[in-house]
Length: 36
Image 1 (cartoon, rainbow, N blue to C red):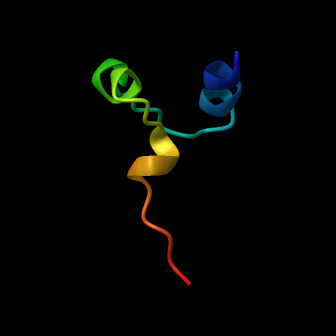
Image 2 (image 1 turned 90 degrees about the vertical axis):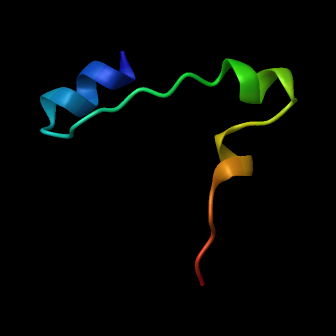
């Protein structure tokens, strides 16, 4: 899985429960802050 590949590469992984966001037709992109 992608999670395992990232962990094997030394990254720390934090999972986030997205059920409530998905029910509102949202995604992680909707929660992102874009910087220029």
